[in-house]
View 1 (cartoon, rainbow, N blue to C red):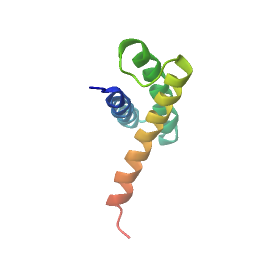
View 2: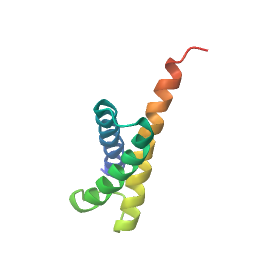
View 3: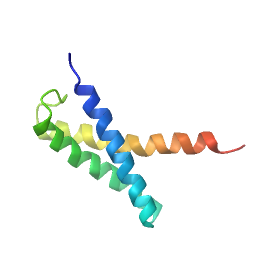
View 4: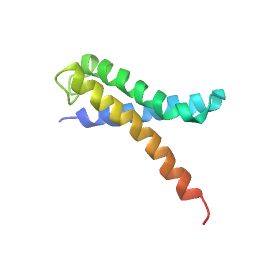
Length: 87
């Protein structure tokens, strides 16, 4: 069974948690997407080397997958935020 895509989802979850930590720290919210993207990039490269089924064969692709996953964490947060907003 191939669980490589689960690694991508895990990066998104970890980046989301990092973003929530940054938000709780009081740092300006404008930096959260950048921090999530960078965290995802780093996690993608780490995952390349520690997860045998990670869906990348080289560090550049792993970094890109990680960065996109990190930015997706910001998007997930915004979807939840907009869903709660009243018209």
